Length: 373
Ligand code: 1CP
Image (cartoon, rainbow, N blue to C red; front, top):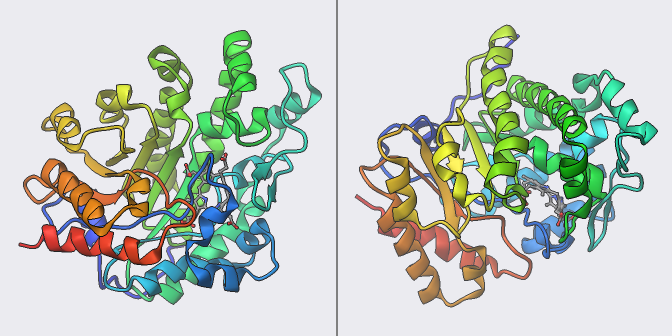
């Protein structure tokens, strides 16, 4: 059964993501920023703090009213400047659905009290044997998406997302953020087969979670491989790419079986600049990139393939002066905005803590100004 919502008044993101020629590049940014940015990351908007109140992070995700309010905040503050909303949720809802306990520790980030220790750990077998009822476990995400679509009333498209298998695997074995990735490396270099079995299991949950988000109203889906850059080229080919490709291949089939139309798909293999060429062949419409990639170089690598790029200004430029922000936008526009297609303007990652919301506004306004016909 397909839900119906108000028609889109602004479908720029979707047209651009399909590779069409558009009047200007669509733009949006993510509020999440990982690693050294602690939980303050989500709080660049004072209204976020207010709506969240004393609830913990996952409580907000599980309450469709609160989650939809939080999703809409950037759209309301930057009305007319942003062309997409991204559902307020987290990549770690998948490990939760797979039976793992995940807490969001204030000012620290995610914490798994019982990470997977090794293939002989009884928990690994439990996770592998569990028949995950994604619809039931993550029903709150789908409710939040449907409520958000209603509240958006066609203003901009809504993005659904999941974590990539490799990145989710890292969290499940490390137990949280890490700089060393010692556990992840131990798994892949000691237990490659058990690692791959788990990656495939995660990938199948990702397919189902994305499909159900689309059924609930998500209009584009994005796969975040935030820790892709921890793997060298051969390991990335072995432990990340096949599972990203599995998702892009299976999702359209899954949507078809649910009687749903395809939606554009984005992959964001953060830090894997060495793999940009093959990322363009992974079956995704859009490839997101961080700021280590030069826009013009990236466009050269893409060649004439029908792939759209998303990114990629250094989020840290928002700590800088207005002139520095303008310069960063000019560099992106010059490199990415060729032939009025092929680019979704964004930062190279989420907004970092302590950024002045006015600087973000300037970033958006400059993209508008510098790409005007
Ligand atoms: O209360 C708070 O301040 C919590 C901050 C916060 C927010 C706003 C976290 C904790 N997650 C989120 C929401 C979130 N997470 C979104 C919704 C979109 C938005 O609000 O703009 C998305 C898309 C994510 C995705 C996510 N979660 C990623 C992938 C993107 C990326 O940053 O690379 C990752 C790695 C996570 C895990 C996570 N959740 C939260 C933190 C602080 C972290 C990273 C911790 C770490 O490992 O360093």
